[in-house]
Image 1 (cartoon, helix red, strand yellow):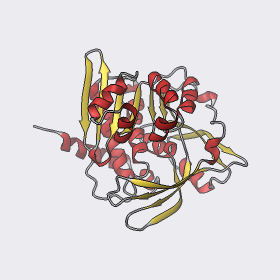
Image 2 (cartoon, rainbow, N blue to C red):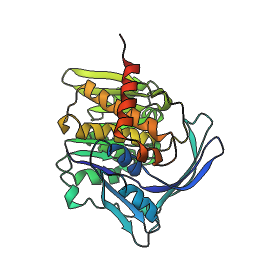
Image 3 (tube, one colour):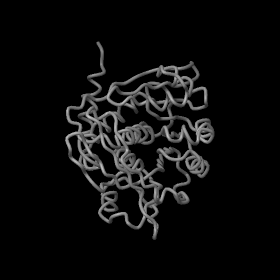
Length: 311
């Protein structure tokens, strides 16, 4: 089944608590999502960069066997989105040191005709009006999931509410769920978001894993997963996007690709996303996602599944 993602591709500068800084590295929600999802099957990306986007990063994306970047616009005279972040000692929080929107202030990229039959859609973090515009170009979708952030809750709440009412799933972190709903309790916040329209909500809690709720014919189901207990954490940038990529890649390409909204299916998808994110944080940028094999993923997933098993 066809999977499409739209979001940012950027150039990042990251500073870690150890004092190590990496400047001008490949990043962006669309890049991390795609690098993760392609381990399950083909993913079509829709994004825009400027003509300052390095050839080596175009080659990096081309190096992933299942990423189709036909929908990546390289705009002459424009500059690529840039972001800088400095992580706190606990690696679970960071300060944004700079944001240069650049090409993101221009018209959003168009969805290629070849992509418009996409059945699985992920709207990575972006202005909700832009996300809505993308959604409307994909009439054959069977499953549409969106990500968001506190900025849009603060400055584009009306657009965000419309978006949430039209997607099947919403992925956001704990602080954002609180901000959107006013609930301090994660379960209450997630259930509140369900009342806004989607069939399921995933609340990311960083090193504490995730909580998810889903509405089906039997009512509302609730579940949670821990994070994979990683021993090596170098750079958490992109962990949430690769988590979403692992989740959506699994839903789109495994088990025949048919949408199945059982709680167990969603839980399995989130477990795959958790494992994918655990590789991302082991180094900078897409480096680890580019080097892992199918065997590496299977081994860590089996290990994670054994951790969750209770006899």
